[in-house]
Image (cartoon, rainbow, N blue to C red; front, side, top):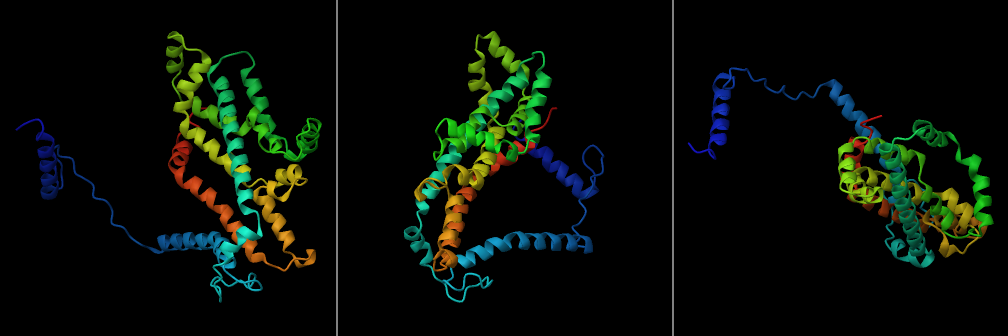
Length: 315
């Protein structure tokens, strides 16, 4: 018997022995898997899962139905419209500068996510690799900034951007990420602590600088956690209504982000503000704004799961 065929033969012998005697070739009794039983406990569990799924999906289903209704039937709470108005999806582009809003949101979210992911990884590499006096205290101070509410620093930060003359621009919506984020620094540090220090020491012996180590070793190995930070910040920036309202409200409508634009559309079509109540266009715009996030998470799902599974191994 050749070496190539031996593993297949061993597997075949084991399978035959198991079927005949219930034991393998070493005499160990194999344990059969318990049959699947759908009892009252599992039925209750499945019922709760379906119930929660319906509760979470109901707003999306309502939004989809409302986007296909004519004016006057948007808020009738029917999940199946009496009249399907497919033209709403074509007319929304002429009613609202939705394409400008989507472009602005995508550009700002990409800038914010990229800058905070890179800067946070750089700071996390410093805390994870270098040994210096006061490192633990300094890292604790970085984490302590997470306990400071954003409302406390809102006015000082606004005055800073006003003093440098950047109000009404994109800079306040992403440039602050150049200095990293405490939560993302903590997340990246926990991941980098799981990397063997021998890699960095070997690179230093070969003459690599710390900057080269960061770009050639740290960044490729931290791709899963890097994408986690990128996805989190992209979503946060995409849904950031408050900062867009503060820093972009003085600009033109075309310069709005998607959340701020949808709020503007709600006011524009309100009958109390002189509108005609064409809220179906607001529903269409709200539904289209969700699409980029769905695409992003669909492509990043594998890295998202891998990053969650491999982050936080060391303290």
